[in-house]
Image (tube, rainbow over all chains, first blue to last red; front, top):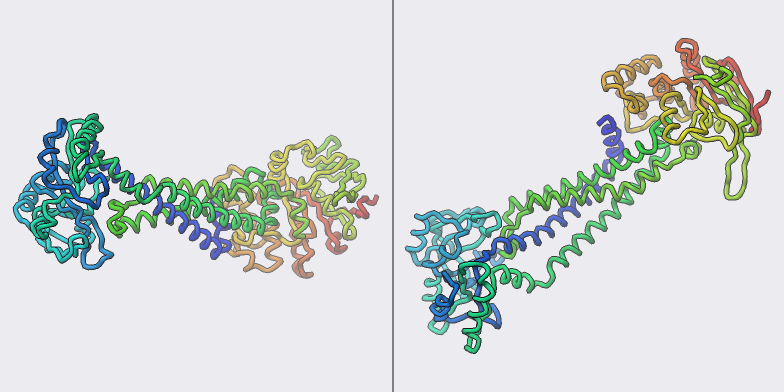
Length: 382
Length: 228
């Protein structure tokens, strides 16, 4: 601690340079935490997937619906203990940039299949009782300031027109990984509002199975039933479905990791340069400290500590800011990244990275300073 | 803390050679020197005569190419870099021509630097720093930064820094070289007081014959050879 004042005094010697270096590290760490959070939010969606839930869709593509008539046959497949269905609505609120997920769901079976969306019994009853009712996630309600009884106009894109829903319930996630940014409404309301040619069609079926071990067998059985029909199916676990959805974007994880690493590496080079410049400017002062009896190890520590403190300050600022911004903003990336929260472990990872940056950027000037020959340095000054 | 013959500084056949590219530059040639504890010795000589190099060898910030350098009972060539640094902290107080204070630290913090290497409490360090500043007459300048001090005041802070850890030997390299006559006189008087009252052994390199007159003994160095 007794050296802290000396380290801080040296860091604040050129306030502008120190600020710019801390700021550049903070920007790099902010971007790193943001990109990392894209990955963790995908992973959260995967974690929230229920191992005893299967998703059935059209074998060709998500955009092709399946007949409602499949419901009875799916329910009879051995191993299936529950079934619900729904359609992706794909609308927005007031402005196309206000995107979030909306699903038209079979209200009578929805809560049995999705117990992780926790709604109080009275709200559940109110939702079931009203054809235009909806339930919304807690984060969504907070973002737009919606409360029970509010009427929400949603502009449909897949199902054109303005659709009005009345909030009758607000659900919370049973775990922190559950998306709280979705609006669920009555599938019947959607179906009955469509022209005759578009009715009785379902985007997705969700099947509940007795045990995760049954998933491969049940999936095979379901797909075999409809294999030669006009609308063949593809059945997979919810987790596989989520993973497939993400993989449509390509190898996102690798791409984001490369971009994040490149940013951090570029800033690392800038920091190394700054630290070397700062140490070089103080060659005479380091020589004086050595003449006073400061040993090589102590000099190494002092110069290294400056670099580490500088990086940690930037890391704390960048990671902390990322956590704060995305906590306060309820950012969902247009509904693409529900639960977009910077996790504590991401902040810790960012700080760890800042620490490594500090050590790497400080090691070369610290070694140079420690190896400095006092007599030579003093002779140059004199 | 003295050598076998009882002197604080004991040099025998000391040579120092610098190498520039493949060129060999002899700076000191066969120096023999003994300085007793409590002495005030002035070392004079023209530029390039090797005065500062000799001072650096005695202060333990450079090593002789050949010969024996014994100071305060230690043979410096036998010490590892770490032990040599610790030895400097314990025995040597440096005073430089250009003061060499750390510009981002106050006078008090500059003077405290050698004490950071000790196990003293912060309270005790502060007490010693204020005492050293009082000795050099700058107790009211403790919170000033070097840029807020005159040249003479800066040198007095540097002297306070040199004496704060109570070293065995003060080595001063042209301590008045950058000062006007009045300030130079004050600094030399201060060094004389430290020698007389605190019994500090002082080795001073100077060009100035008036400065050398303040010392007990003056030795001349010419082309790396100490004159008899």
